[in-house]
Length: 449
Image (cartoon, rainbow, N blue to C red; front, side, top):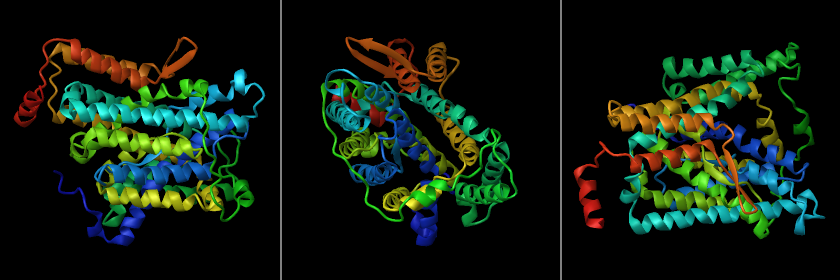
């Protein structure tokens, strides 16, 4: 274990823990609030609410930590995988949806999210019954390593898309993170993301005052929405509704997100040097993610998912204490009561998010490479090359996923879901496996068989 890693952040003191939690909150914030913004476009302004979304992210993360015994340092933010499902429900114009307003359709989409979350419980039960070791026989490092690499690289286009809105700010954010991480001393060394956000935001304000604009001529920072937002208000929750049509649109997406969940937990395990798939168990992490998603859908929020951005922060800061993640979750819940402050944080330029993402997304892929190297995957073995090659091309090539129709139900599998499925199947059927469990695992498998 790396001596520089901090597993118990209490040794740093609570003020520093609060700063570390703030860093994790900034890491998740941009992507988390982007989901309701996009869904609002589909529902013509009557879609998901940012306050509800922040509450669901924070409360869902706390629920996840409760169900995983507080052992897994994961943050649950808004899932992008369900965007296509929300768009489909918004465009329904037959049956009960014929004369509905967009706002009336949304609860049915959220009802589909609830059912999707409950499907996690089915897989969690299967794993509990058959044993995680039997399941993980199909997910050795030759499969999980390339999947983790894909998780990071598949996010790379969004980093570039955000950064190119203002390359100067993106480079300032990126350079600040690198400088503080490499040459920073003491506390500054473990909060490089927070320093990158603060310093580049100050630069953005100065640039705007000097008359600088983004590459497309737009203002670097838009303060208009802050004035419109109230200071304090309760979240406008709305209870979901159920209809078979919306359920069949949303629920099958869980097939993709469950595969992504396994990849994310593998990435967090590799980052922290711990086997969270075994302890507290993949069944518990699935249970936590699934119930958090079902809870969010029930009160009118988006589906939740483990966030790669926060995994990148874990790797960069070397602070792996789940308590810090829970602090970030509490921040998110508190922030959901203060629309004006949420809007202020939402003014962070996309270019800054892009610059920070350069590091975070790259870190995830680097973790995947490390997973392959540390487990000594033999790429002289052609079957291992084939498995890894198919995963990488599938995970990076199917940028829009794969959409197909069964009966009247349209299902979209994301690139990561496809990569996971192909990798698992190929690893299972190709001969000459060279991956062996250690003696303890092998003995347990023999007992289970």
